[in-house]
Image (cartoon, rainbow, N blue to C red; front, side):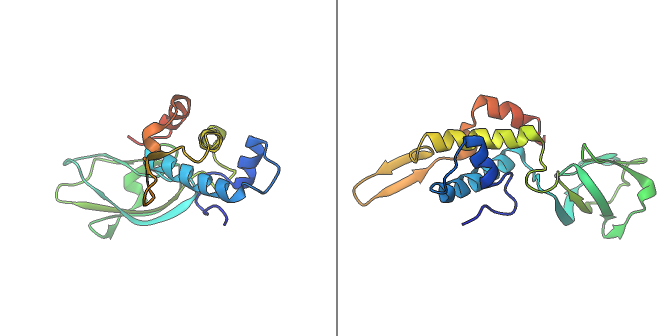
Length: 186
């Protein structure tokens, strides 16, 4: 089993961080890489690996709204913005690629309810992420790996064996949370 293509790091890079040189734990590390990557994406409310989003829907919060916050950023390319399925000219908006903010000149006219945005966003592939983000992933994996298989179990019963797992994002260590908070969408 290999880690998912949208994981924030690789098993090989994680093994280097953990100073593991044997393949004995690769399957467990694959699972931890995927699980922690997903927990980080859930906590931050966004993806980090470069992905193309087609007709991602946004709604107008108030009449005359001039700024639209795109869910995933940094924006690499903005292909189109449609308001009520009409493609808008790029001359009526400015794109803040690093912030994910699109500013409309003069605001969005009354009566428009839906905006669809097609764009590519992200930091690149695994290994191209900001180093502090990948470090947060490795540190969290390290904690789970070093605490053994009981980490994350909220309830365990022996007779007619049963196990329940807690939400990973509920127990993010403080030093990791400080890093992730800089990437969290508001």
